[in-house]
Image 1 (cartoon, rainbow, N blue to C red):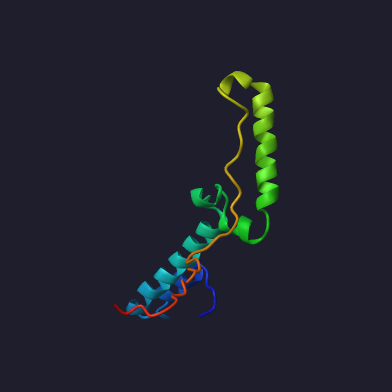
Image 2 (cartoon, helix red, strand yellow):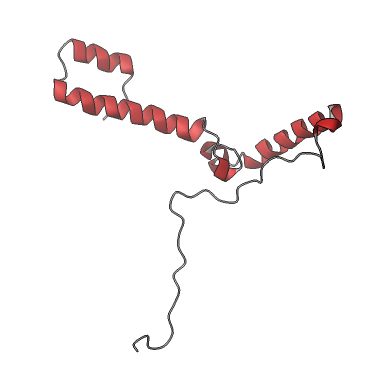
Length: 114
């Protein structure tokens, strides 16, 4: 199905181009598209150093991490009393991003029967 804007779907629904039972499916598809875009492009994930999956996937993690460190360094120079023990550091950079990471299978040696 081609990507459609909400306005186009609403217009077709109001003019009778879609039957009522199709509207739920179209609405769900529109929601999922917008949610997945937000999740990948705008939502900062704690598990990947408060970066977005797009930033990590497209190789922007180093630049984002460096920019954050510069800002934190400036904040420390301007107000060192706000930081108790040491200068602040951004969250660690992610090394990989997985939905379902590959599991290393153990190879059994010998006969496992009792």
